Every structure is written in structure tokens, then in C-alpha cells.
Amino acid sequence: MKITAVSGGMRKVLAHPVTRNALALYAIQLANYVLPLVTVPYLARVLRPEGWGLVAFAQSFALWLSLVIEYGFSFSASREIARNRGDWDHIAGVVAGVAGANSLLLFGATLLAALISGVVPVFRRHQLYLWLAFLSAAVQGLSPFWYFQGMERMQLPGAINVIARVMHAFGIFLWVKAPDDGWKVLALQAVTGFIALGITVILLYREVPVRLPHLGGAVSALRMGWSMFIFRSAVSLYTTANVFILGLFVPPALVGYYGGAEKISKAVLGLVGPLSQAIYPRMSHLAMNERKKAVHLGRLGFLIIGGAGVLLGWIVAVFAPLWVDLLLGPGYDGAVPVLRLLALLIPLVAMSNVMGIQWMLPLGMDRDFNAVILSAGIINLVLAVFLAPRFGPSGMAWAVVSAEFFVTFAMAWILHRSGQGFWQPIKEDLS
Image (cartoon, rainbow, N blue to C red; front, side, top):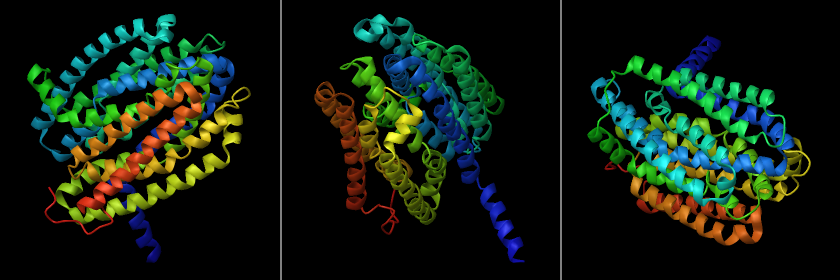
């Protein structure tokens, strides 16, 4: 009888939307984790520090530009979808509005890339890298994954994403053979991303009535996502854009040291990311309807995700020389001290994600949240401009760690001051 009860309980846990979506996101993250463990050592050795640094520089630009095109819809639009499930007329309006907004943002991103092509010295010398990075950013930024996240049905889109990444990895081994083949990495990323984008768009419109975008709907979507865009833009100043910022001051080889260390630290940090993403729509729903359950889920998430961050950060810092030797190979000794510094990010980001994304946003504390993130972005940018030219990769690492330290403790202080921390009794009049 006990075994049957346990089995039934396990089935209920596995059937829960949060569990299913967490598993789907972990499948994506497994691809993000395992595939770089194979491709990064290969690319670091084939391209050498200078070629690898050039690829990392272009990929950092692509990630930053994709955030501009995506505009934070993974939070704002997914939250809107989660709050209005079953109202297909409203959902169709949200989808059309986001499509129109994406079109406007893509046009602006094109103009921005054209401007950068003549201003940034590295891209003036390597135009092909710039425009391949632009294409990669476009397919990433236009992805409708936010819709499936809001509906808490991410299994199929997650599988498509994994297949695309596997195709990208196979292409690297088949096509990248020499130090000057770095552009092929970006080309493969753009092509496989375009395939995944096409399939997910088809899946989306099999469920949602097709509506042509119009200017009013696009403007409404931009207004809806404005606070999240500020958040994502500010975050990019001390996360995805750091390799790009460093590349403005130091040679590509030094960028390669930082880029390699950052790849390792982000791969490890990604181990706690899927659970955080899976909890977000559930927290958005519970915060509006069942506050006590939201509190319990917030506390549990903080213990699990924060604890995992501390453990993983310690492992990365202690064994940094081993990770650099295994994953980057000879010639990357300069990445070891950088990786040890970036290991501090892992517990800090894990805890700030729970407090900020999983708690402050579902409670509607967007203004406080954005104020913290924007301040951190400015701190990182100022420190980077001061430290990177003088101390190179290590200076850049100190800048981003300082910014994340500020984020974590500022969020804890704001929640404590407002009495809305999930470690405190929740207020019944929260709005």
C-alpha cells in the first residue's frame, strides 16, 4: 500500500506542469551544457586564442542584439499569456502585437548594426563576422518561445531547440578546420536557429488564430514589455555584453581568455536556470490567485536554487585549473584567475534570480526591480571602462562580480524593507 501511494505521488509530481516544463528546460540546458563541453574545447584548440576571441566577441554582440529584438517578451508576454489562459481572443491579440513589435525592433537593430560596422574597429576589419552575428541575433530574438512558456507547454519547442543545437555542433566538427574558420561557427548558428524559428512559428499558429500585426498593437506590446526591456538591457550591460565591452579595449587573444572562462561559468550557472524559468509562470499565477502557495514555492525555490549555486560556485573555483585545461587546452592559462573570479557569480546570480525574477516580478515590483538592475548595469559599465583597459580580463571579471553583488544585496534589502520577502509573513493587501 505504501509503495502504491509513493508511486501515485511520484506520478502526480511528474505530471505537474512545473515539473514537465522544468524537465523540458533542463533538456535544453543539457544541450547548452553538454554540447559546449564538446565544441568549446575543439574550437578553442582549432581557432587558437585570437580566433576564438573574435568568435566570442561576435557572439557577445549577437546575444546583446538578440535581447534588443526579443525586448523582454520572455517575461512580459509570457506573464500576459499565463494570466489569460483560455481567452484565445486576447492571446491572439498579444501574439499579433508582439509580432509587430518584433518587426519594428528588427528594423532598428539593422540600422544599429550598420552603424556599428563603421564604428567598432574589430567589425570594420571583419564585416562578415558582424553580419553573421546579426542574422544569429535575429533568429534568436524573434523566437516565440515566450508563448509556450506562458502556456506551460515547453516540451516540444524544447526538443526542437535541442535538435537545432545538435545540428550546430555537428556542423562545427564537419566544417570548422582552421584558425580562420571562425565565421563558419556564426553561419551555422544562424542557419540552425532559422530552422528552429520556422518550426516553432508554425506550431504557434496551429494553436493561435492568425492576426496581421498593426501599429497600434505593436505599440501596445512595446508598452507592455517596456519595463522588462529596461531590465534585460540593463542586465546585458553586466552579462552578455561583457565580452563585447572588453573587446573594445584589448586584443582578441585576451578576449579569448575572458570568453573561455565566461563560457565555463555560464555553462555551470545554466544548471540552475531551467528550474528558475519553469517556476516563473507558476509564480506569476499563484501570486495573483494563491498567495500562501506562492510564499511556500518562493521559499523552496530559494533553498534549492541558492544552495545549488553555492555548491557549484565552490566546485568551479577550486578546480578552475582543471576546467581550463580540459575545456580550453594549452595557451589559455590566463583564463584560470578569470574563472575563479567568475565563479563568485554562480551563487550570487542563483539567489538574485529567485528574489528578483521569481518573487519581485510576479508581485508587480517591476519599478524596484528595474531600478536595481539598471543601477547594476551602470556600475558594471563604469567599472569596466576603468578596469578593463588597465587589468584586462581580470578587470572585466571584477566589474561584473561587483555589479552582481550589488544586485543580490539590493534586492534582499528592498524586500526586507517592504516586508514582502518570502522569508517574511506575506501581506494580504499586496497588489
